[in-house]
Image (cartoon, rainbow, N blue to C red):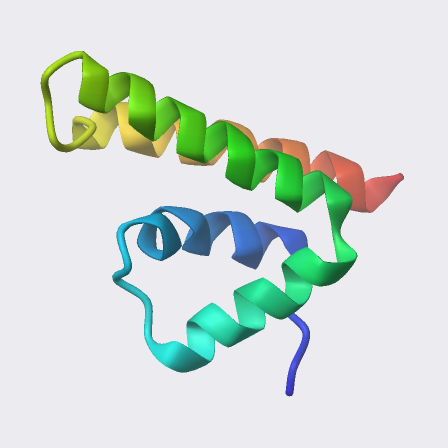
Amino acid sequence: MTLIDCREAVARMWGYLSHGLAKRDVKELETHLEFCERCCGELEFSRQLRARVAEAGTDQMPMPLRQRINDLLAGDARAGEAK
């Protein structure tokens, strides 16, 4: 099995949380999370953010907001890989 990098892990998180990933993609993400504490934190942040959005009375986060958050998280993941 191929190990995915942090950028790919972050890109898959929203699909993972909404149960929209293929089984292979889920397994690859979960394998990455077993080794990457940083991405575990990103996943927890994503879970909490989704819960807050749901509490606000919407089922889904607006796409522009989702994209901005994904871009920010992906930027953080790239910064972490450079260290």
